[in-house]
Image (cartoon, rainbow over all chains, first blue to last red; front, top):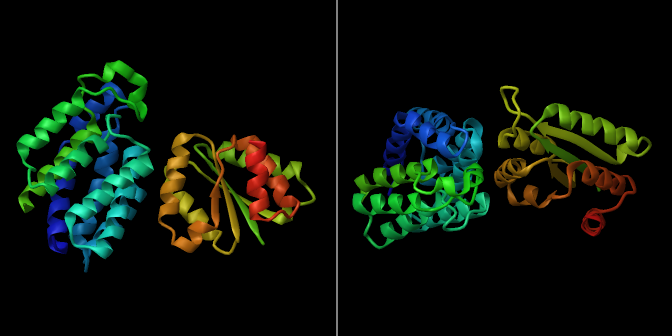
Length: 190
Length: 129
């Protein structure tokens, strides 16, 4: 993927999370404080504006700028984690053009910064398997839906949702859905 | 070796009160370390923002050793995210302590006031907490 592809992919994602802000808030209200949509949309809006108005000469510059904008403008834990994720991805993008490696770096960032493990019902539970699917050329809508359904069955073990314990079973995690949107947007580039 | 202590808190009132308390409790040696706070959000609410912490850390770029304390879990996340944005050399000068913020900061300040170096401070803190 070249710089323009990153711009198009991520712009598409930012537009989607902004459009789904209310829904993401609603999901978050059931197992949290109801502001996930607002938080991520704020970051997305700033990022979208930058992608629109600024020139980037490389994927790593683009991703690094997004990392900073997310740090500056999102609220909440997820926003900070996404900022760290973009930052790690930007660092990897200096060494390689392989999106697989870059996505894997993102996965590691979520684990490190968020201290999440697989099965905690977090963004990681979508990012990791969908990166694997991308790597093995099995990423498609059906796979994304399958992973979303799988995450729904988990009990939250991280973040504010963890306080809701088994009341999180059968409920969709907004972070997981946001990651689903990211990989859905990526389908255009496969 | 110059030392700085950073207090990261969700509340600027809490951080400022703590800073005042500690400097008052170590009156004659407070020139052996600098203490700064990084607290609250840009719109004046409770919370921590990585950007504000990063700005403070950048202001301390001339200090050899930076000891960072935080009040609660997400303040640690914000601190770690801020530190991520620094270059390797800057990052190496920062040490995050997980000790309770009041006791920990006070004890650390005492060590600094005794002109202990970084290794000595870390050893003393690890022993005490």
